[in-house]
Image (tube, rainbow, N blue to C red; front, side, top):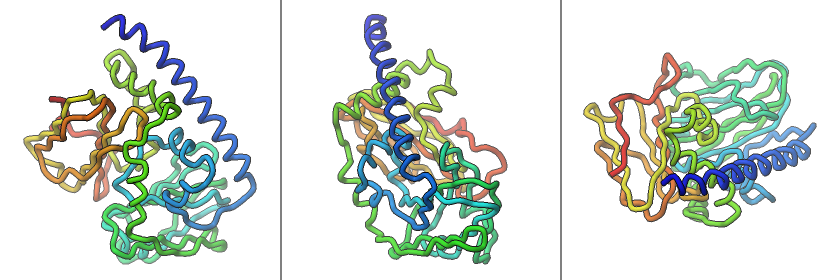
Length: 303
């Protein structure tokens, strides 16, 4: 085992450097393209994939795909003081939804508007923001047969129009299910090795490298999944009340191969056909007082 570590660590360091170099280059290209331009219309993730270099960009900025949500993006746009969201549209389009507003240059989340926190019967939600350039990422969970993306109003003036989305928009996921490629395998080799050597590494480092830029209301559990082993999710208390539990299994290239909502416990996955990783999202459907933590009674292991 020591010999395998001796071989894996230099390769993982090379992969780490490769990943962050590609991420820096693609971020610079994106910033140059979007500088001084406002994008005042929604686009879904499936539509974004048709753009040049979109897939490599996603694989270095949001590599742990969320196949459970219908994901849409808007921006960048300049804000002086506030953003208004027509939440009645979102409420009528999905059982659960979140809008995360991030700084355009850093992708640092500044605000989150969640279906569990909004005021009932309010048509518009006003979100105060410091002056700057922002992007918005909207996630619909359990969307209706006719989902619509909400209208936005920026500083009481410029508008992002409401638009309809096909309920089958996430069908594009079949085109990337289990996708392979030497480029993507090299990009994500290091993070799989980090998961394998987890007990030797700082958890904060592993969390920063593995987890996506997610919703602040979500708790995560993740780990290494060797070929031939199953994931066992158990709890004597069941899934926490007021939460929904989602599971995604990824391959070595970090593309999803299996996903779905875990609706009851215990839950056992089929044996992994190849080595990869798993990510569990425990999403609160109602407001949480503190930063969400993974419940101790919700046990995840291999068998």
